[in-house]
Length: 160
Image 1 (tube, rainbow, N blue to C red):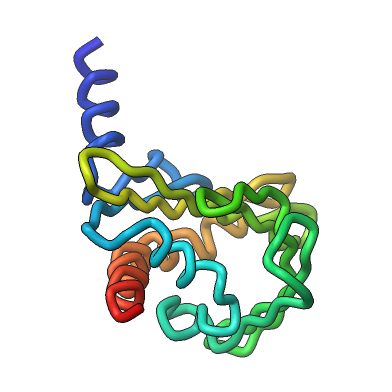
Image 2 (image 1 turned 90 degrees about the vertical axis):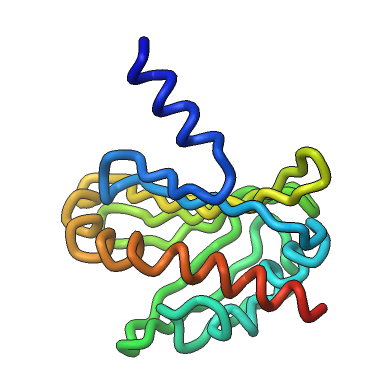
């Protein structure tokens, strides 16, 4: 019971990294005074993702930012991959899926407000037959980058 309370306290505390014991599923949460709308505007501007996501060289979306829309990502190393927005709740959350060989990478971003603070969370999940291999290869680096990426999102939003 005590370990559950510690986990929940850590998970729900703004500004703490919420790592789910695995490179296959992890997240980071940050609290800020920036409005949810400003964060949302940064998040849905796909063409500018590379300015705050240190793992990207380029990102493009074909069409409006909505469920079902597709796009392309280019990593810093030049790897190209496709993505599709698979869940969308205007102004609150979205999830995109990047197909991998026999697996998928899901990125979920969501916002909430509490006591005048905006809480933003970025969650990464590897799922599928080969998820463990991809998580082992990319998970540690993604986890390490995530807190700085989140702070860059806030910095960008502050300038809006």
